[in-house]
Length: 138
Image 1 (cartoon, rainbow, N blue to C red):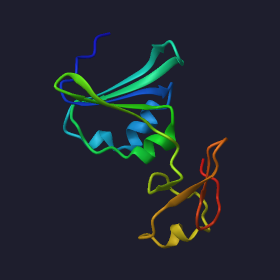
Image 2 (cartoon, rainbow, N blue to C red; image 1 turned 30 degrees about the horizontal axis):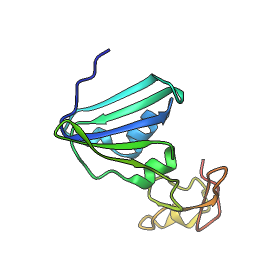
Image 3 (spheres, helix red, strand yellow; image 1 turned 90 degrees about the horizontal axis):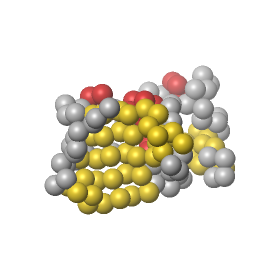
Image 4 (cartoon, rainbow, N blue to C red; image 1 turned 90 degrees about the vertical axis):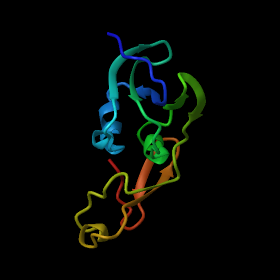
C-alpha cells in the first residue's frame, strides 16, 4: 500500500493500534476539506502494530485530546516536504469538551451550556474523573 508524501501537513504517529478511528472522530477530522489518511495496524518496531493519521494541511489540533487518547503519540509537523517540528504529548491534567460525562445525574446532563471537564486523578493508570460528579471517564 502506498500513501503519498505530504508537503505541508501533520502526521500523528505511534497511535496505539485500534485507537486511530477514535482519535479521528474526537479531533473532528471528518469535517476537514483536505486529504486525511488513516492507516490502521501498520507494522512498528517499537509497538508491534500502530495506527497513523496523515493530514494534508497544517491545522490546529487539540493536543489535550491526543494526550488523552494515547500519550505516546508523536505529532510531526511537515513543512515543504521536511520534518519541521516533532512533539511528544504528555497526558493532560485536565480535558475540556473532549469526552462527555455519562452519569445521568451529573449537572452537565441538564445544563447544556456547561463544559464537560475531566481531571487526571491517577496518572499511573490514566484515570480521568468529572469535576462535577466524580464519575470515571470510560
